[in-house]
Amino acid sequence: MKILIVDDDTLILEILTLYLGTIDYTDVHCAENATTALTMIKEASPPFECILLDISMPVLTGIELIPMIRECKGYAETPIIMMTALNDRHNITSAFVAGAFDYVTKPFEFFELETQLQAAKIRGEEMFFRPGNSLELSEDVDKQVKTFFTEARPDSTTAVMESGLLSETAFENCLRRIRAQSGRPPNLLTLHMRGFANAPLRHDGRESDHYLITLSRNIAKMILPLRGIAAYLGDSTFIVVSFGAGRSAQSDLADAIRRAVSLTNQSYRNDGGPEPMISVSSGGSEGTVTESDSSYLVYTLKQDAKVGETQSS
Image 1 (cartoon, rainbow, N blue to C red):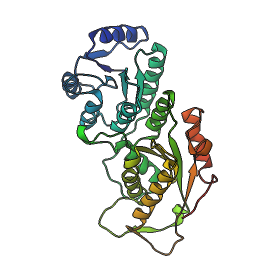
Image 2: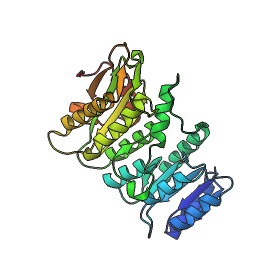
Image 3: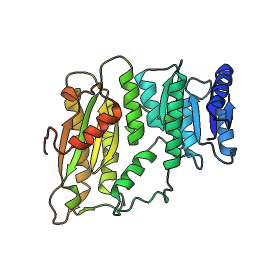
Image 4: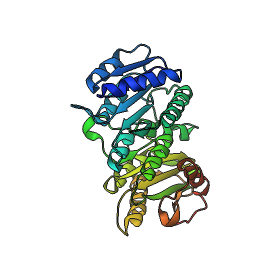
């Protein structure tokens, strides 16, 4: 696997290069700043297969660099692992929203980094060709929506916020990192569109987006004030986390999700089929994230989305 390490600390570059060599990663390249890294990325042939990226760098931070990397040809899904001493919610979430694959804090355990590199390698092997950006309705709607979530990243450094849409894997990694830090756990809800498959919905406008993709856009808008992140789990099911504080935070999140559904429905008409119903379910104890493993939590929510605590609109 061809790896690029970007860090302004030359000692870190030396140590990581030596360590990676001991675990059979020998095609390793280094850059001491974002500008040099971007040049190397654009000129690399073949492209880098994984990027280890520091956040705190002069002129341009690692988080600011991510959207620039994603714009480079062949790097839309390249795993980017953040390496940083910054362990606060804002930097963690902003990095994932910008397009990070995982996040490791300094001083880091080499075993943890090796595990993340192995996951990145598997991710690279599983990546498949995505034919353009067409989002026209097809039999495989789930694949289209998941592709949309993977590609729905900030298009500039100024657009990076701590709220947005994440791929399922990035969501799990982000949630794990957020839970690892001290403080109040975030609020979590799932949204399932019951009966959606049998509803022949048609868009009233000129856009060609599928209903679920339009809904995804509206979810992103509505959770922005709540500092929320969302992922699509498949089978018309979304998972949403917000970091809003206060007694009303959970109900505010539920209201935001329902507003997103209502806004989406205003753009579509139903030609004779049953109206799609929504169920909004709390995750964990009283809606907060439990101490269970993030991957297992997401799996459980997938299974429980249709039969959880239901409130229909």
